[in-house]
Image 1 (tube, one colour):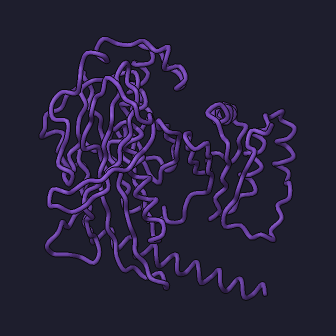
Image 2 (cartoon, one colour; image 1 turned 90 degrees about the vertical axis):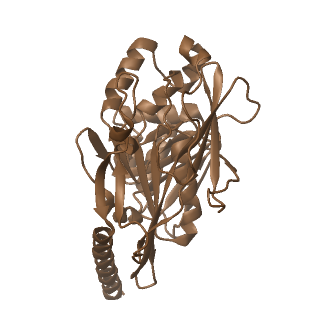
Image 3 (cartoon, helix red, strand yellow; image 1 turned 180 degrees about the vertical axis):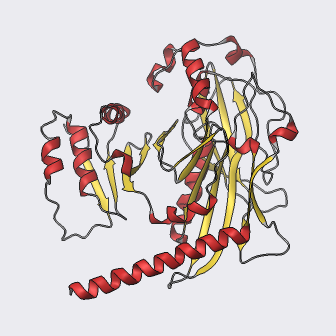
Length: 384
């Protein structure tokens, strides 16, 4: 039986016939497993703007692919964005979305932080490539120390993992929830076996979209980042860029997603490692989407509830609202038992950008896109 019994591709010309190129032929002589060979052929046939969907993908299949990547047997891997949805048995691949072009004005560099364009991130329900992510450089050493002390491996090893006394006897210290529209980060004080996911996670992820048809899935993606990483991704930012048919800018806004509540259960009868939507209300009475994900941690279960802030409008400018895009220390850096910072340290602004600068940079990128579209149209007329 083939590793992928079904596959579908979207946005492809139905009359376009894909032929084997030299890369495909070479891959057939590397003694690759059928799963990896089919992935390589699909990746090579993929065009910008297309999404290739594999169905019937198991966790074992994905680990096989992961091992092939580590052995440099998947040549196009670094150019692809992937979305592995373990619960659905689905793997989606595509090239970097064009809209990610608009994330560039939001990128910044500060000491102790790394910026990644598409670092695949493990989640309890699969694995996914973010738009842009920021990594706390201290996580690598924390992860190394944790694995050295307590072991490590894939999720199927969890049943054999040592159960620490602190995992079964301690609940979360301090407040377990925050105001839905506050951008403080809810801290957990205990570290457990499942927290190794957090050492592999970015601390901040940004996603952007320009099409209203994509915004519902964009919100779902941002909720998934935070909930299905068990709060390892401390915050995700959902950015909307509004343009008209001529690619002129008409608006920009953004929302923050973060954990607002953590509940600890001795027993749980629902679905583990699933992102589920529930209803919620803002502090001012407005409806807001809430999502939950429950995962096993040692002998207990934790349910993470995530929510978004209300939209912050960047453009058109509003004199009554905020005028700068702010990122605080707690949004980027994880708290650890050996280094607890004061509240004032956690709330310190480490990056601030005027809205006017963001608008200027996005206007320039739209100008570039309009020029590129014009050149492509001229080239098309010449060919015909």
